[in-house]
Image (cartoon, rainbow, N blue to C red; front, side, top):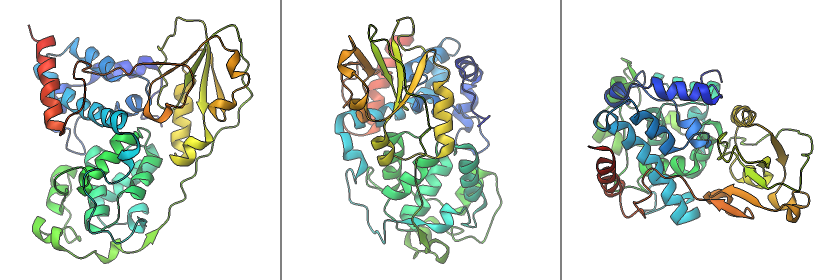
Length: 368
């Protein structure tokens, strides 16, 4: 957990220390320069424009373009969720084929695939809540395209352990790999893993050409399956005390922004709804991280229960939250999302077309 400090000061230091030039050239390597900002973005501690604008205070648009491009992927996935709702949790454009089952591959869950970079990445996920994006793609490819497992339940397994668990990015990235959100499946082989993982391993089930990997039967090591126990343990907390003369601000695991309306007198409540975590369970590591971030917000209390069961809800003069696809059932006023490129009104078609519109906006706004 120490890999991810929780104070805004430390997060700002991480943003300011990012070498965007090194990031652009090495981010795909498992030992490359990555930002490690995703847990703070996913948990709503900082927003995409907050990070971009802070980067652009010290870096040119040209130098930062690759980093902004990757931020745009996150915005693209979020916008699709806002526009398409729960459609992101089923095969989006194409049916996944072939599919042998909907469970989880045991050797992947046990980090015993025999591929060093993969197994180490899974062990890192369990111990720190972090997994390099390239390893996520490798794991998803092995599970869906080599193991022929439907993407949905394995994606829930990965989300369960990720500090940066983002339902849109996670679900749609798995679908991109599995070919249900893209025009073709993503495959990897041992040469590719060795190149980006700084390994020299041979004689694994992926130590073949891409053509052979795409045609292979499910390897024996990927055949045993399990059904992982994905259960959320919610904290035990005292009942909150309210001042019903003040507004109620609702926070959640996707909005832990310490600067949100921070100058306004209000009741501040982190609401952890059992129904939400039954649908989208998270590990004890993730819950501890959520709570650690929550404790950075002055005056925040915690409520375990459904939003409509908050005592005397109708007595508050005003109820406010941030708009989010998972929390549209919240009562009251919802602040609009903070987009990188709000003038790009809708997501139309592929990421490439979305990025072109965003890039044009970026250059117009930030180029002299």
